[in-house]
Length: 331
Image (cartoon, rainbow, N blue to C red; front, side, top):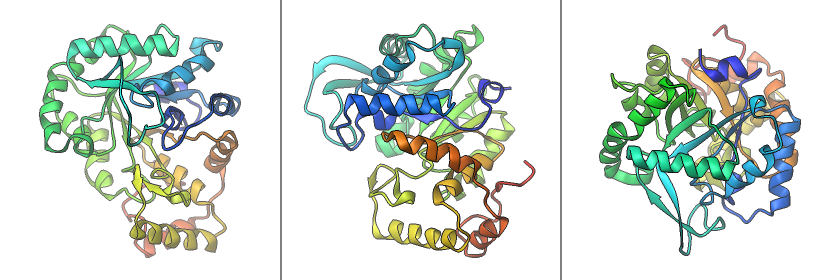
């Protein structure tokens, strides 16, 4: 049984990508207040990565957690990117983050170096879970296959050895697209035990993962953590969908979901969290935020009572797959 299943009292964690100044410049006080809200709500699984603001999210998280007993929370970060002392002008998702250059490498040596850097920024002596980050077509196009092979020969073997030695509890992939996890789950010598899959097992987008990824994960006894359950905020009326500008089709999709939710007095946030966490392969859902007040909304949403008629209407309108496990099902 994985560490998330044995440690967590509910399938809820916190994703720190927004704390790396994702899309906007976030004041330090606001970032620390957000993490404090997470802690005060009893959430004890924190996920981060060097990529999030070139180490900014890790440093902010470490600054808060350094005063908390290490055995009272779980911590995951990612490998595949090393933060350089050199700087450059940033653009894209984390243009407001630190301006340090980021070097990508999935070799065994790079993994060890990346972990050492992360431990320093997080001000801790151990990690519970390590994900291999973004070996995926959305970041690397056709080159992702060659990078996957580099990771298979390097990062996977090092992390698998670290798990066997008890240095970490779990390892896997942290990606937006399901294909890399599916490929990794078909390996024989190094099979991930827990992977983070963002944006593709959500209320808005789940059919591909439901058909292929989830059955494969269950077959290999490998868990899934769902990241970005609101699809970068689009589901809640935001302007981004899967880390890009939301187009009109996305906005129309959200309006349709909202109409059904209004029919049953259901919040879409509750529907999103409960849908993603209902699949038996899912061990945690990790929304992120930089607004302290949003954290209690998440915990309340996970406990909100949703009538079965809501899910039935979504299925009748083909907004949710009829094969998807739903909250209240015996899974």
